[in-house]
Length: 273
Length: 273
Image 1 (cartoon, rainbow over the protein chains, first blue to last red):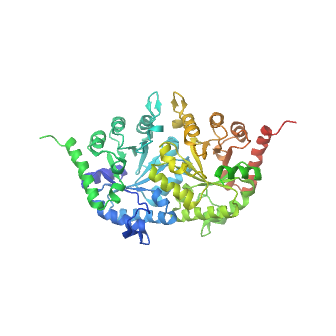
Image 2: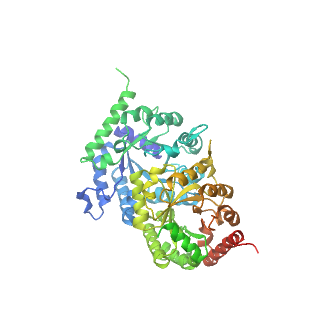
Image 3: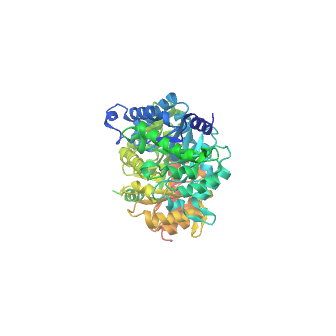
């Protein structure tokens, strides 16, 4: 099954647009897990068990595993394997923001899609399409290309003004019109810039958007849903990382966010009485 | 010692601007090493031993180790450790092209600079300066920011035309004028675009440029030296990967390229008779 179809099926089955970000920084893992031989794996298993009923995707941020060296890499792979076994219907995203020349991108693609077995990966557009082509050729996987990111200084480069519009808009148009030949592209559109998300939705048609920036970074759920829902009432992968995994009660935090998203979604998609 | 000072001292001592790229793709490692328990490590040790007399830097391309999972990560770390022990004067570059939001970049920086212990890292500018700030704060390390890359389709985004010039030029100006507060920035300027390198040199003053694209990718040594040498007759880290490490005789390949670089350099910097 294609990554997009897998996600959409899960969204409908679970009634959720929520993605839980496993930014499992080893320095922030609660004491109950930090004494484990594999603390990141033990923590991730607990988070997955607690939050899976409310999640349609999990996003693994590679930095927090690489920071733990070969052990981190093994715990990443084992966490992903646990997730795939216990929750085979949930989309798995590798948040790696890769982008390199062709033969290097081919190695990254093998690593992320074949060796680790993720359904989707985040990619950086600065090197151009040919650099991402080895990823784009995996028709069944999803390639989620950075367009408008959630960091405070994201405008510095992304909002540079070209005659046809800001750089992020040009990137969105390129992805939608040219890079998406295999129908496997998605875009990153941050919750912290809902006005830009409205314009990205207008460019992207029904393309699915990965939305970072909710929660710790200040993005507003209602604004995201209004700006980003597609014509099928889906089209958004709304990520929260620290706000869920480091909450006192991750299950409740995930359920609350899922419910908040659905409340806004119902307002927009249900027929009024 | 700062990374830039380390590199310059080595350039003068070894008489070389050559960087050897350890793109040690496990599928391309010669049979003599592929039966080893740690084939990437065994291969890298042999390449380092053969090429070190002619090299002032080594660049490890992370993709080719990540493609080999936790084992690849361990072999990367062990190869770097071998290089640091056997050749402590040679600059070590992590070619990772990272760029992410702040807390994630901080984790990558810890991984690359503290855990692995590299002198330098390649970074992607698309997210803006604040995303790279955790790297930039390591004053003794070098942050090598993508400006003009060597892939065939690099112009697609990098040459997008803003009122003040192409995107790569705007990136170069930002790095030189704003991001380089700690004097630890460098730029990637591909050998495949020597005309653009001339303009990057004009913008960058004496800033050091990492130059991919020589050899297998078609860049011309003479054009690179003419375009890129700085006022001290240095300022270039000229990388060759496949053209050296997969040559029949890596030592001769490294010596030949070092000599070809120096012949062009002498033409430009020695007083004429």
